[in-house]
Image (cartoon, rainbow, N blue to C red; front, side):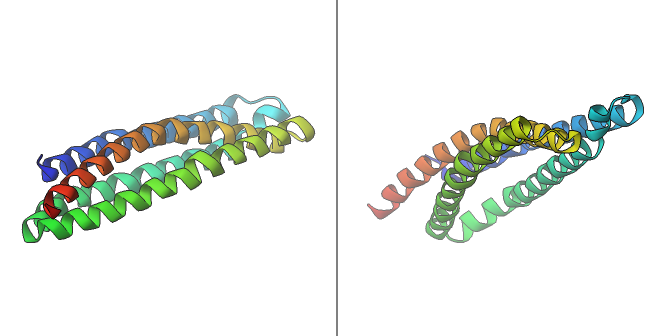
Length: 170
């Protein structure tokens, strides 16, 4: 198994998926502009700022992940050629830490925030609070959808790294 190819394939897959954050961010910003231009009710006007903020956050996330993975892609070959076992060890540590973050943030914190926002919708009657809670839920669902596939990719990559680590030890 060529771990350099696996690492490169993983990074390229991440480069493919991170623009979806940007795409959804643009959709949220366009929705904000639509609410600003066409919103007549208090509820519609309440969506202007929350959707703008959610769109900006999604675009920032997407751009940050894109440039991080783009630079990582070029560093893989250099790191692997200088010391293959150190490369595997560092990637293994990074993948393990990322998987732990997914378990904490994506699969525990985000669902908890969605539950809290759902309760806000039920119990608070102010349009800005409801619009903020609904927009937050929509943004977090986008993050869950994209990060769900990213979790599967990093988990498969982690398994490949473990396999290569065992081969290097033998």
